[in-house]
Length: 155
Image (tube, rainbow, N blue to C red; front, side, top):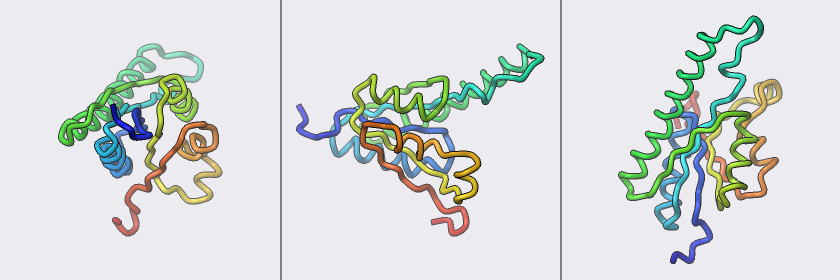
């Protein structure tokens, strides 16, 4: 049995290039600590629910699109983990991203949540909010936020 404080680590992924640095960080921590890694993708309800009048076919196509995106995002983590000999379990959730991430971490006794950030400016954070910011604010679990590449400098 590992004496590491990290037994279960969650990487919250949206499949974007910006999150890849966070994925690599989560995999490295999991490898060093012998932890299991959970790749979690959250389909936000508001991404595929339509205002009235309801268009069931269109709603279903949005749902299918985001489910496929989630499978691809978590498959990337699985493949990257397998390359480093890290056990990865993929999970696709539906709901409010920050709430679902915090809730999953609580229900599954996650020791560390790893997330990427898109490095939004202050106005974008104010107008749009930030999933990472909300998770940090509401989680009772440790949260590591990994900044993605700066699109201006490429670093």
